[in-house]
Picture 1 (cartoon, rainbow, N blue to C red):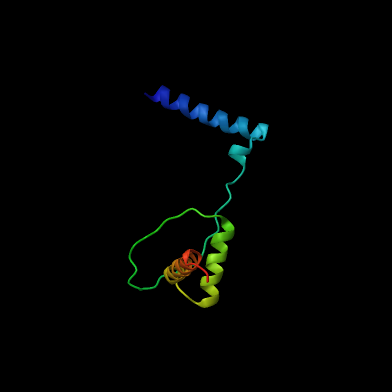
Picture 2: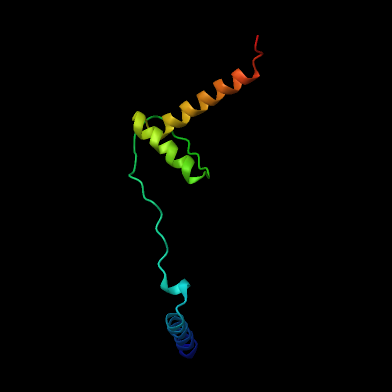
Length: 96
């Protein structure tokens, strides 16, 4: 039991030494930290969470609108949905 632990420890140390000597990026480089935003906590009655993946540009634009209008994120999302519904309704309505 002790021999197995020592062998594993020696293997780990040897791997780290080899990586530092060879300049391996995987062990020497520190991972990039994601951008941390200031927490936004408001009691609005909205209690359903939506997780989406979006492009960085879209997320930045979303936060910029929210900040500029001094809305909470849920309100910005709801207004975007209403605006999209209006736009789609206009596209479907026949033009005279």
